[in-house]
Image (cartoon, rainbow, N blue to C red; front, side, top):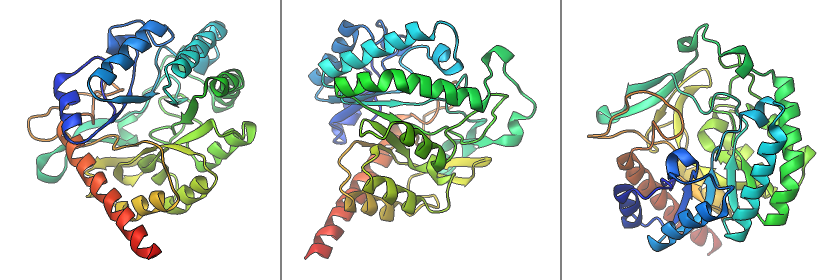
Amino acid sequence: MLLPAKEDPAKWTLARQIGVEYAITKASTELSGLPDPSHFQSLQTIKNAFNKAGFTLYGLEGDQFDMSSIKLGRTDRNAVIEKYHQMLRNMGKLEIPLLCYNFMASIGWFRTRVDIKERGGALVSGFYNDDVGNEFLDPDDCVSENKLWENLFYFLDAVLPVAQEAGVTMALHPDDPPVSPLKGVGRILTSPEAFEKVYERHPAKHNAITFCQATFGLMTTDIAALAAKWLKEDRIAFLHLRDVTGDKYNFRETFHDNGPTDMAAMMLLYCKHGFKGPVRPDHAPAMYGERQVDFKGSTSVGYGVSGKIFAIGYLKGLYDMANCQLSLDKD
């Protein structure tokens, strides 16, 4: 479960009560109240707090500090890359083996609406391309797709050797939504072919994929075939399991048991191919008593605890079903 880096009594306690033993966190200063994780003591403090509460901190997710210089290719990017190196070394020393990262410049994962009513009046977010209209970011915050590819490879050439040395797997998350441009900003990780291009540059186990099932599902009509291919190649290090209804230009989130994807078949597929990495439910609806006022990125929407409790219970049930089915098939 993605849990706050600063202890949240409700979320941390409820997570333990529903059987969560492994935590993923975003350790940026604005969320932790500490210096960013390029500072060893900060990351050690966060890990120790999770350990004391009964969790193993398995990985970090998202931009742990301002990555705009790297993503936009600004003149000070080498200093920020060195900061990234130090974070990777700290993760290695503290035995935090996974880093889920993205290369969405200026705009992270993005939604245009947060008040869409789902089953029973639960609230979900959605992306509708027409809502964006003619909104554009400042030209200084925009970047072309070609330049973004250059910047991504410059970054990976610099950090992947350090990640390998530190024993940290870097798992690349797709662009969400997988459309380009968005508000004048190019986006490149919008197709399975883009991930093949990244792997061709660095065909190594520590250069892996965060398989965000819903986002990749918006890119292809056969999500099972794509997952099976990358599982066979041992390239998936992290699973984000959720579902959406619609296409990449117009979609909304939904409950894990209420979307178009055959979630049971997908869980059986992951188990059949022996996936051993972490799984988390990603976004979930806001349920009774929870509010979604506006979209501010990061964990402002889709991270209420009630929806997560339902999602994790559902996924645990699917996991038990899949293993039971595999045992019957073996017999």
